[in-house]
Amino acid sequence: MSNTTYKWIGKKLKKLKTFKGGVHPYDGKDLAKDAPVRNVFAGDVVVIPTAMHIGAPATPVVAVGDRVLKGQLIAEASGFISANIHSSVSGEVKAIEPREVVGGKKVNCIVIANDKKLERFEYDTKPFPWSKEYIRECVKDCGIVGLGGACFPTHVKLTPKNEEAIDYVIVNAAECEPYITADYRRMMENPEDLIKGLEIILMLFDNAKGVIAIEDNKMDCVELLTKLTADKNNIEVVPLKTKYPQGSERHIIYAITGRKINSSMLPADAGCIVDNVDTVYNIYRAVKFHEPLVERIVTVSGDGFENPANLLVPFGMSHQEVVDEVGGYSEDVKKVLSGGPMMGNALYNLDVPIMKGSSAILAFKEDDMESATMTNCMNCGNCAKVCPENLLCANIAKAADANDMDLFLKLYGMECIECGTCNYFCPAKRNITQSVKTMKLKVAAKRREEAAKQNNGKGKSE
Image (cartoon, rainbow, N blue to C red):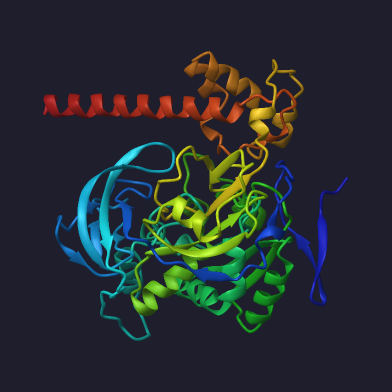
């Protein structure tokens, strides 16, 4: 039986693209989708981590006692895979010290006393036309990273080994995590700027076509952006079947192009550049206005909030301050998450800063994990049926729990994208994803250790 689905888009019948596997959780979008983005203002102090991106932490370029302006560089990328950090307020640097962030780790943070004047640091800008080098330099200077959650430095992504091989630039507008509506609001409120951002990226790749890929639970976005791009021959709006994890980089590439990538490949190896909606919007702001990334839209939602909202939050505000902005959550809330319900982090302490990857704060009156009773694996195979990577999830988790690294690797455990579909669909309520994630960290640590030994050996022999 065909798995093809079609949907009317305006006057056209369009095929909904998707991938094999995945799940259909309740999406919860209706709680916050109609709440326009509103600005919030930082309190007396912001705590800005120097590590809120993949790669090496940024190196502070300010000292305690310095006065900084909003948008001023306060920590510089310390390598090619790193990102600049800018102040989200004006004020005085009070400390540079380790502070706790989401996930429980402590990272070096720049603590700034907010003078609430919001005086901006002014950068020079260049009028259009822009060279490729200028575009990439602006993106790097402004600290743009992937805002879909991965936080990979965008200037690196826009600098593939062979730019001539790139034939697709995909705007990831799936926003497949339940409850989160930040990208939806960006598309509805700033559609022209989003399109301009995509056009800027296309300037870098002479052979590329632009695709804005949107799940079909956001048909108003599909229709709006289809209308606004009707006269643009190199941009197409493509509806996707609503299914988690449709927004995974691997699976959106497959849905759009039919090309597959794995953990040893980059999207560029499949001729693709993939950027999140808000990343593309901020690329436009960086190139047009040299506007650094100092804030982002955060969805505050879940049945624990009486007033769900989409807030434009300066980096360094605490999760508690953002919760207070909407009047707090109800007394019977049992679980609070930073991020989505499928891949987010449970919070035991809300006194941690909003960072570049902070897409949402969700509060729920029920904790499914708390009330679930874990039993032995039933060997039902349900996890394998829904795994978007077609892995034998239960077997991989068993190898991880037994600390059998060789078997884990033989079963392609490193290909797990940690999306949580197996957990969601497991009738035995096994915590498969956590087992696999833990073993992946062990494998990565072992590989780093072996690489260090090899490098030391080379140094001695030389």
